[in-house]
Amino acid sequence: MNTRTIAALALCAVLGSAAPMMAQTTPAPPGPKNDYSDPKTWLCRPGRVDDVCATANEDATIVRADGSTTIERFKADPNAPIDCFYVYPTVSRDPGGNAGMAIEREEVEVVKQQFARFSAACRPYAPVYRQVTVTALTAAMLGKPIPADRLMAYEDVKDAWSYYLEHDNHSRGVVLIGHSQGSGILIELVKHAIDGKPVQNRIVSIILGGARLQVPVGKDVGGDFKSIPLCRAKSQIGCAINFASFRETSPPPPNSRFGGSSGPGLEAACVNPAALAGGSGPLHAYLASGTDAIVSAAALAPKPWTDPPTAITTPFVEVPGLLSAECKTDGTHTYLAIALHPDPAGKRVNDIVGDLVVGHAPLKDWGLHLIDMNLTMGNLVELVGEQAKAYRAK
Image (cartoon, rainbow, N blue to C red; front, side, top):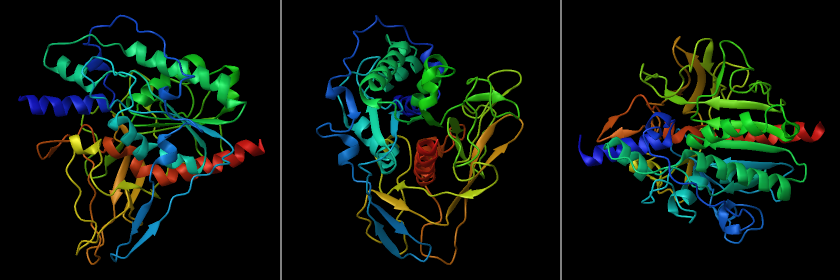
């Protein structure tokens, strides 16, 4: 296995549920606490100078099946009635085992892809934290582990959450949002600092993309969260959404890191953002119009969106009617199956990119992990808006 292949696989691991890989790393000495009163420790926090969420361009081009296009301009809600608190996946390429606190391109780009759009429905908060790096994961795969500390990453997020509650929340409702390793950290935060505690009353919902939240088989509550059920209606609050996306034509193989059970009587939760109560529903995706910083390291470049090609000037593209989703189970894995509905007579592209690849071969055990949030973004933002109304009514 060459170094390039190992690096690509390490990036895959760090973006996902990488606990087995991280267990091979050596604990680092505890680092000093972060001062979350410092604006430099936040990517997004209302009123912050050069705030990533406030400055991100979230405009999108709607590309219809007939090839016609319309630009949709994004508008944040400066008076959003609730907050959102986001923990991003591990994307840092810093040289050590844990990332530093400097805000770099990878953190900025993932916020643009996965979180900034939520500012249409909530006030956005996104702390910087010292995650385990791609460097550490690559070193572990090469059999030369370097010191890295998963607990420090969790403690950073916990400290940021505590600071937010004390100084920014003011008893407002809040949605927790994470993806991949960020989701894993949020699961632990909810288990130890929220579930069954007074602050649970402020939780509007918990959105966990690319994670493996465990529930008892056939149940909506229990398992990882003792008193927080899965969301089954748009007006429901205080609930959780969990999903891991795979192509309908390429379900999770036996070695998949997502969708599996962690023990007898448990299964991975799957809540379809496009049909909370179950069944299939149309996806309102916001896909990167080009190759963003996260996808570029481990996925194929996108094809032209129309034939003949149309110049796309916005960072995102919408493809109405092309995608739908449904939660499915094969008895071993529970996952969000993504179906494509191509129009052979149309002029729009009939496929999407986002599979993790090494060379040109997709890693089927990772599915569409890279674009979990892009695929469901429009559905999730709409849902948060509806939940905000329900929370205020309560």
